[in-house]
Figure 1 (cartoon, rainbow, N blue to C red):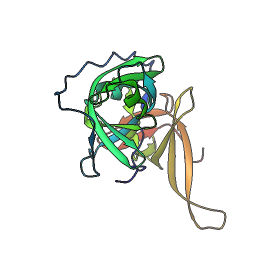
Figure 2: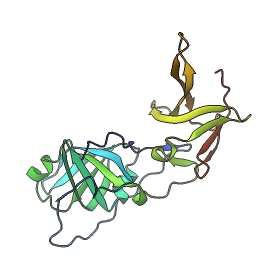
Figure 3: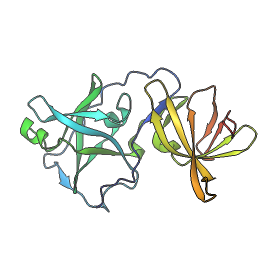
Length: 218
């Protein structure tokens, strides 16, 4: 299986202050459940990268994870964590997880001590998009916005969402559109539109369209 570089990282745009994430509920696993090897075919088609293991936590097999989005809600809700480290792909049932400062700590079946947890450092964690918690009003997952068409209020097409940037103060849509370079050859233009209410008027996931208050010559 490839390193899944094509899979977008998970994130959430939030137009209002983020709510504190509740601790993830513990999940019971059968006695023979543990880390199992995976293949390209067994990985979920909707798997989204949501964090990375950065260290062990404690002595009983817990790991410390840097989430890709504030609160790490997908890590807390995912029933199974899918792990990628180099060419190795594995998965396991998430037994427990909770927010710990700006990280998430959790335990998965088959990892019972600190030494085993340390072996997971550097693993990228994926969760099935179907297991993400429902977003609140005016909240959108980055993965759901990728590829959406962007038009302004007069109907002029501005391009499509190619990427998302978090500059610390706000989220920013990176829009790509067909253009021409100085030699008249086809090129890709770029627009950066802050994802804030003054500019973003509507987000229609069903229609795959975002309407913004933004002129084409900005």
